[in-house]
Amino acid sequence: MKKLFDKMYKDSAKSFYEILSKNLKDEKRMFVVTANPETFMISDTDKEMEKLLCDKKTVIVPDGIGVVKASHMLGLDVKERITGVDIAAELLKLGDEQNKSIYLFGSKQEVIASLTKVIEENYPNLKIAGATNGYEKEKDKLFSEAAKTNPDIILVALGIPNQEKIIYRHLEEFKKGIFVGVGGTFDVLSGYKKRAPKIFINLNLEWLYRIMKEPKRFKRFWNNNVKFLLKIRKER
Ligand code: UDP
View 1 (cartoon, rainbow, N blue to C red):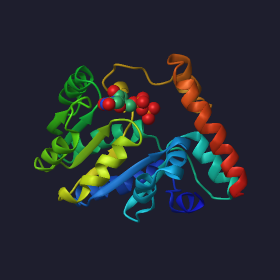
View 2 (view 1 turned 135 degrees about the horizontal axis):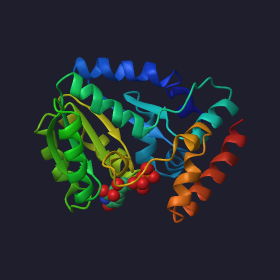
View 3 (view 1 turned 90 degrees about the horizontal axis):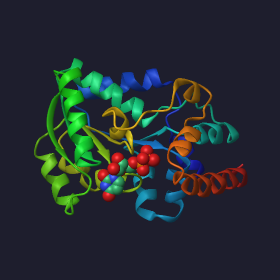
View 4 (view 1 turned 120 degrees about the horizontal axis):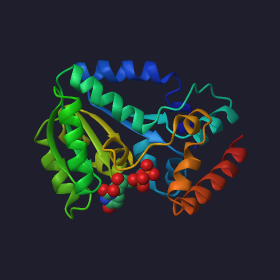
């Protein structure tokens, strides 16, 4: 697990967005994994996930506060959280500024429809190359079809680890593209769900807000975070 922390992006969100902007402009292919404790826990038992995270082409950023704190416990100078929702919002902005195209893959059909509207209204220069909801059966086939639209940005909202795995399986079929597995981000960007109020974000309690809003998340949170903390202690 330590080797994944070593390769994680450690600088500020601002500097990361500069890299995103440059790669988008230069049409470089880039795969970003926004890591939470769950990401590392899954990679411990799931070989496919471990392989994609270890791949030197994969960029891992610290999404959850648990990952930032664990990095500090391991003596690494990780500056701050760089969240999936902030990256997705930044990519919409950059895509609009640079007249790029986006493919939306995942989440419910009505969420996709609302997000499409939000993009058309607020990011008029960002072309929607295509969109596929995350409840279709033949996802791999549909992902390959998405490659044919040659998008500049590909956001995948299927939940961890499916979103990361499908991106990794098909990466080489795309000539270019910034790929990010964004979890529940479409729900927030489309206005379907509210992101935590600023006070929760600033106090590093966004996880608590999500559990309060959706108590069924508690088990998932508890299992991953407690085991994660024990692992980090051992690694130390
Ligand atoms: N999802 C999907 N297909 C599925 C299962 C989930 O498209 O078969 C979507 C779901 O609608 C949601 C996202 O994947 O938009 C996962 O969101 P979640 O909040 O669980 O992710 P987190 O942000 O916690 O990683």
